[in-house]
Length: 105
Image (cartoon, rainbow, N blue to C red):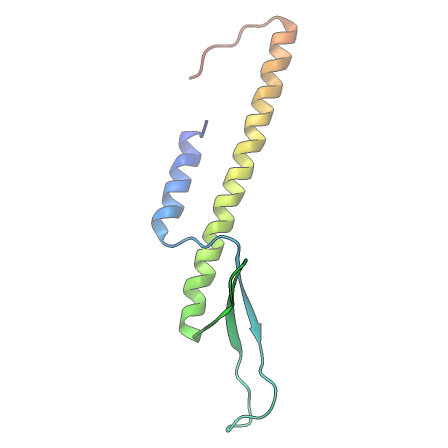
């Protein structure tokens, strides 16, 4: 069961835009020399199980935000699982002590 507060947070994160799962951005400086003498940083979008794709500098911010949103959702899910485990543990202790718990609120 998802609490209303967590549900609101999840919906807010999903409404912000695209969410990328199992994705990271790698950066590297190409070897060799360039016309201007200074190599620029190349960014690659790496998706688990797929071929890496080069990103334009303007796209990096957008994709990083999508990766951060996925991380936030994963953290909320872990927190929810932790709280559910605590609730089950407390319910078991209350039952052991012979206390009655109110129905779901």
